[in-house]
Length: 203
Ligand SMILES: O=C(O)c1ccccc1N[C@@H]1O[C@H](COP(=O)(O)O)[C@@H](O)[C@H]1O
Image (cartoon, rainbow, N blue to C red; front, side):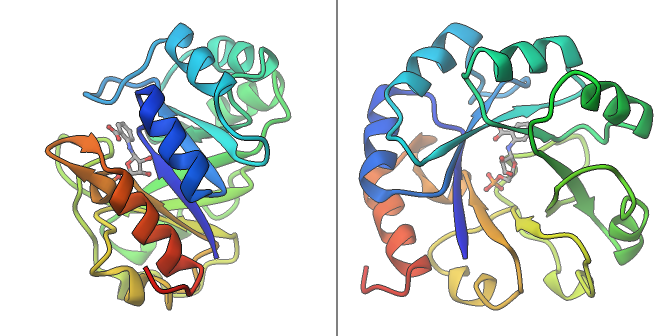
């Protein structure tokens, strides 16, 4: 199973990720305490080990800005976390061929069913918390997932304790942000332990 660490903001977060070796790291460009500027993201990306892909996290942002970040090599994949509509997706598709992770806030299976034909490579299933787009640190009821045709990233409140169950959901990848933080900053030890668990190693 693949692994994504999201919301990296500092050089030491990148160095910790390079050591733990997730498959993806995420830079949040949306309104968030984890938000990075384009310049910060470019600097962080330059220090990222080859083989780890960078995902840009956006909430209803300008497709032109997203495409420019892809074209500049700052990000490899695009995570849309704002319930962007089909017309938006078509516009973005016309500007970049980057793979898209489409976030679904799951309150019922119908939320997943509704977007099943969207032109995206991956779904990202997250908790549905009123007034919060993402990075809430809350899980949702994974029994709601049911049959999902597209590969999906499982997100929302994942941490070392619930990882063994998360590994059995059939997700393509596990996505953690709050669960690899201590006092709201990324924690190198948690990253290392989570990466070991996902690989079936002793943490
Ligand atoms: O992390 C954020 O601050 C954020 C802001 C806006 C949209 C998405 C955001 N993060 C994504 O939220 C999920 C779940 O994170 P958590 O583990 O529950 O903290 C994850 O996909 C992040 O990429």
